[in-house]
Length: 325
Image (cartoon, rainbow, N blue to C red; front, side, top):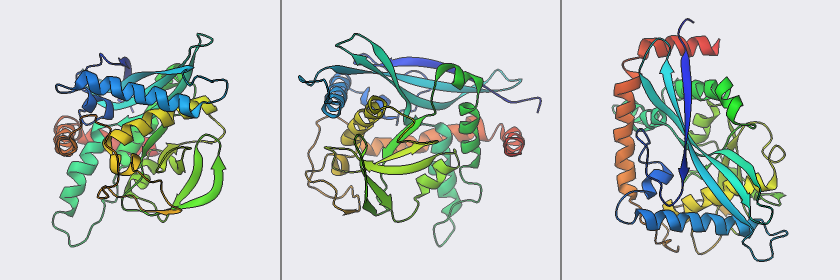
């Protein structure tokens, strides 16, 4: 095709002075923390929790439990349609860098971790409700997630991605309340006990369109399994420190946002069904407005529909068909 997507990338440090950049989805984990009167306290608390959890998992040659610190950078990818001056915020990921305080060296962690996308907001908060508004039972459109998945795969296959990142992304999310998970016999020294789901969730099928598969692990000291989305070989393509960087970061966010599951006072049993309605959990005391996050997801989905999906629909349909071929 004579027209295609052009991707541009920019990076912003996530630290106690972080403020969301223009175009950042305000429902994103890190952006939500950096708002309101408690923003700096929130950020400091989250960063302390991440470092503490990292050192808790990286115990070897770490007698004082303070050898490592994690540096986080928000990677924002904007997308421009060829021949147009308009850009659209496509994807936001989180990159970890591991600082070894003993050697003074920094080593790359993992790119991915958090995953943010306006188009995903459109799919889940606008397209899906509209599709089911006049239906008796729940269903998903036949091409649900296809465009989003192809945009993601195009970015991962781009020269821009290969120039900045050595390995494929790993995205770490919460488990689904609508599924039951069973502990398997497989156990990894860093990722912990593996769980299997009774059936694929809608999120799992959606991420499958992005070329990602999922495995569920409950790391040592955790109280609930996490969902790890990846391509390739999760257990062998990444070093223990790389995996710990993802666990410590995303488990911290989930303890803040879903304390009923990830800060529960008892660990997941052999057969486990997550629930946000259970009351036996500890509060992290980090300020977070869950209802606002739900409302903003709809607003952000409408923004994507009005500024990206609707005005470029003909091009997007042609591009998606061409990409698949």
